[in-house]
Structure formats: C-alpha cells, structure tokens
Image 1 (cartoon, rainbow, N blue to C red):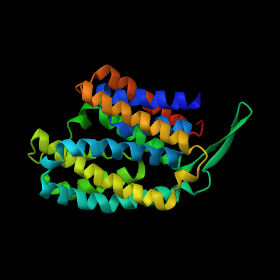
Image 2: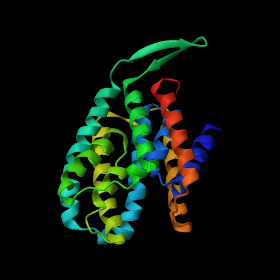
Image 3: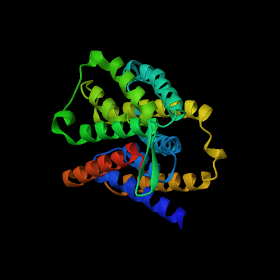
Image 4: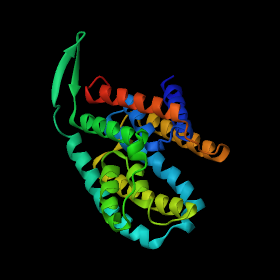
Length: 256
C-alpha cells in the first residue's frame, strides 16, 4: 500500500509543475520529506531532477551558449559542492529542541529548519510579482552562479535564481532552455556526487520505496511534458505556495 501511496503522490506532484509554475524539485522534495528522512528526500529528488534534465538536455542541449555556461556554470559547480557539503554537516547535528505535544515527543532538527526556511523563501519568490519580474545585469552572472549553485546544493532550489540571472543575457527561447538545463545538470551531478560520498540510500531499508517514488515522479514529468504545454494558472500557483508554506512549518517544527 505504501508503494502505491508514495508513487501516486509523486506522480501527481510532477503533474502540478505544468500548471503551478513551480519546478519539479521545489514541489517533489517537500512531499518526499513526508515519507523519508530529509537527506534521503533531497537525494531522491535530485536523482529525479537530473533524469528529467537529461531528457530536456537531449532536446535543447545543442542550443546552449557556451560563454554563459562558463560564466554562470563554473561558479555554480563550486558552490553546489559547498552547499551539498554544508547539508551533510547540518544533517549530523543534534536537534535544536525537543517538545511534547498531545503525549507525543517531537524534535526540531537543524536540517529541517533550514530547508523549511528555504521552502518559504522560494515559494514567495515564485508568487510575489516583485520577485517574478526580478532580473539582473549580465555582469552579475558569476554571482548568479554562486547563489544558484549554493541553494541548489543545499536544497535543490536553483531554478528561480538561475532564471532571474539569465533573463537579461539576450538568449533566444531555445538558448535559454538549453543553457539553463545544461547548468542544471552540472549542478545536479555535482551535488549528487557530494551526497553520494556522505549519504547512502542503498543501505536504507526503504530504498525500494525511494526508487518507486522517484520513477513515478519522473514518469509524471515526462508524460506531462510530452502531452501538455506548460501554462501557469495563478490560482493553482497560489494554492501550491500556501500548501508549501504550511508544509514547511510542519517540517521546521518537527511535526513531520
């Protein structure tokens, strides 16, 4: 039964990316965190994210612009490794606090507290007009790589920063997608390498469950992108943003 529940949820979350404007990783990781330890949720989501990006890379990779990839992607790789390393260190810290509620004991973990804060920040970035129109000068591309890579390594939230910094580079639609997905793959490979040295999903008893959820999420993203043109529906986007904030509060407080 748990395989069905996890796979179905992952499939539905992937489908939501078509209408909410949120990226696959932004939606899938918090949901995975309901079922798995935070570090496992992040690693599993990174695998799905990379597989999805490889598919897009096969379609648009030839359009990437090399100079932008170098200026943005090189700092992104370095700081993705740094962000992933920070995550592994935080994951080993003792709880911030423990408390009892309705005769149950809960722990507030550093890693969940950090991820919860990032979920709230990036949910607001996606829905608030002042952030959606945010663009940066081309001269700041290396800084964009630093920020996108760092947050990508920490939690997988790299898309919003990357898009804002690439918006003024004069890329065509195809170049924007090809360049962005190339950088995303670079970040995903880097962080998965660091995660792999420190986290071992294969040793966990729930590894098959992680794999089932990951495959279902990738299937949902793949089929959705093949059949439906992506369009953002503002009401769905707001609902998803509110849901993410509520979920982040539950994560940060140790309720889940």
